[in-house]
Length: 116
Length: 375
Image 1 (cartoon, helix red, strand yellow):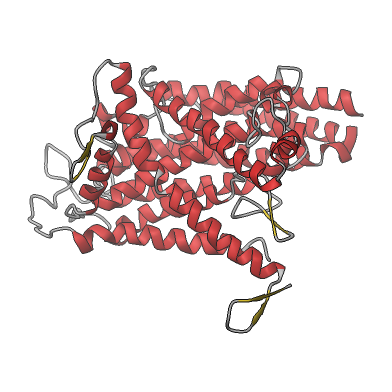
Image 2 (cartoon, rainbow over the protein chains, first blue to last red):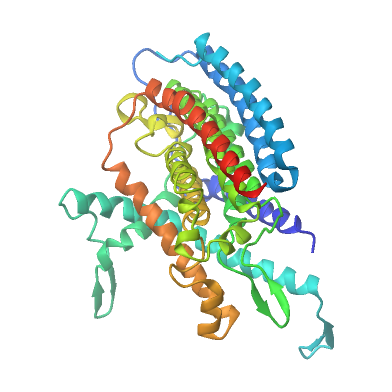
């Protein structure tokens, strides 16, 4: 059996379960909407329908995440084949890590990871 | 091999056996998974009650005729579940309706896929066919689990954005930044373990930890293993947005974070996803560091000899893994009621400025001692 067939089956079950949970209360629960109930759960001045701006820090985090996560994936593959690659693989990954760490030091020095 | 069920012989082949076995496994595992959130909710209310010297929920019980029992309040969760399902569904008028409805689904299906890839025990042998005890057996093993845990971030981000609520948006931004930040240390904590075990296959990793001294925690001259465990446990808490890193839902500042606008069964869906993710990480922690389905002081081979059957030994292993995972589930509750919440900058500094360099150093050190030992 193709090992990805169960993935497909579980995926379908998961999606069906998700949709079921999303619509269960709509089918079973009472429906008595009124304007106050449907208001956004905030307080103070009436909400303007506009997405508030978000800090650029979150974008920075996302970009840095992509860099370092790809690095982690490379390390996984190297770790798996560590024994067959031998010293050659070890030195290659050491060089790779040095380049990456210098990038990391640059990022820290520029203050990209400062939160206040 | 033929099989006659009364309507002509059926040719039994490997595909048929594996397919039927997969369906049975899905029914058992997914059915079992749906029981985790109610049990955890009960534990999360009785646990702190125990620590704070109060009783917690203990009223709701069963009364059938003359049988009256309170069952330590276990029926409270059944009542809660029924309440959640039969509640009115409120979708805020300003929310982006379609994405608001879809977001919980993005939490649920990755959680299901994650739990499907966990090997709960060693392979069974039924009628000469090898039946593994995990639904999904890929040779990339836990990389699949890590990938699926990444998809879970979409649900959180989408939910917060679609709610069109400031608290939700801020909560979801915090939660997703935190989840992606801690995915890196989570991965880096496991790289040395892959180095040590030399495989991605979770079942083989369990197999390699036959005695307590071979457990992942004690590998790498008692340095690499414990360091990895420390990094893994911290990222495990941050990855599931649990206390002391539950900034995504800091009650005093963000109401409830990304699920502020959610109620009824959709709210339950988020909790389902969160608790299943916690369970999966607990299982991974047991598998990588504490022997997985190996019973302590009783290696699998010895257990097979003792019980005289591989199937019984494998099923006992399921019990061992579930007990170990249950300990970590309790550990989540324990920590939640012991440690205060971190500040957001402290959290990000811990992730990026301490865990990331430590993880890299640990990988390098593990590789170095492995290289010295093997080449």
